[in-house]
Length: 440
Ligand SMILES: [Zn+2]
Image (cartoon, rainbow, N blue to C red; front, side, top):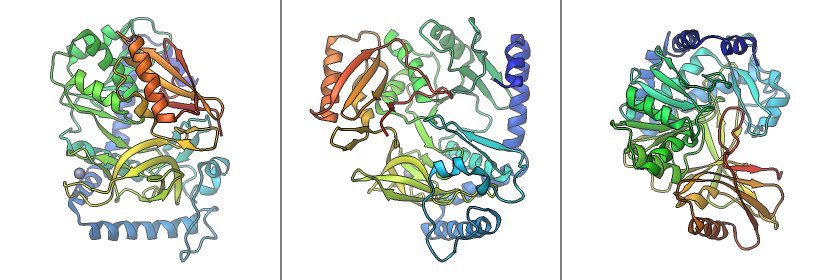
């Protein structure tokens, strides 16, 4: 724990609240001060560009960025501009981070970090402009749906906003400068849910945003009791985790509005935003994304170049995620490619004993409306364990259906065990992983 976190933990609630405002103010200034409004306007102007305009813009930024990387980093010093650069694996960046940091940016003010599901994270500098271009891309997407910078948001994420040992409400803090009520994901459980719901009813934030695994706990609470929030939730957006089909349906039932998702990452190598018609658009002006065929037919690896971040050039960086591409495109007319689905991380796959890899396992749970939470664990090839937290009314029929659906998806050769648990462990950043595989 950092010194600051230790100090925070021992403050009275009112002072913790003041610390939240102060931190919120600091973040808002870094994110939305300076050139942000100009960057946002420029990003929004590109929404209706033609494909040719977009290609031209991307080509120019990419060329300048590659030249910068070649001149100013150890890793890319020998690269020729006339040949294709190799695909970069995260492991290489983790082992030799310093070689990727551009000269002159070693003491950059802002450092981002990724948690890495297997434990190994990454810390790297991000220029303020790159940070703001990313936020401009995210706000452009929110504006498509009518969410404004001043819209109050009930936020359910992984940020530690309430000390872990706290045993009584409030399990939330305000960030007034950022227009957020920050609900603690770490304290959200059966016994505390009534208090969360009561606070939502009292404050009535028109926009709910967060991890699908947390928002669906709130949704499940309401649906199983036949209740609603008693006010109109106008917007529901999710991020950080894959939005699974059964979570989307549960949330729509509980909140009366369809969840929208976007896909992004701290490295800024790719960004994908859902439009008002429900299509997932690649933000072609934010980074240069390639889709390379993966092991499974119709599935592609996401490879991206973060041409906004001069401090840490990552060229043809393998993000580690898998997508399916849409043939149909989208009638909204936005330029660029459309993704049919985000299949999640490469680790979200299971191995059969014959070496076949299976993806899209979220479909196992698509009709499992009485499953509160689930996770798939694989310890060896050819076997898997379903970990399930039963929801209200879960009965033998549900178990039978779940096992049948699993069998249908994974085939006859897989050994399937079922384990009922009270709670599923989250990662260090509070995320719920659909698949935990111990098989390399
Ligand atoms: Zn569209």
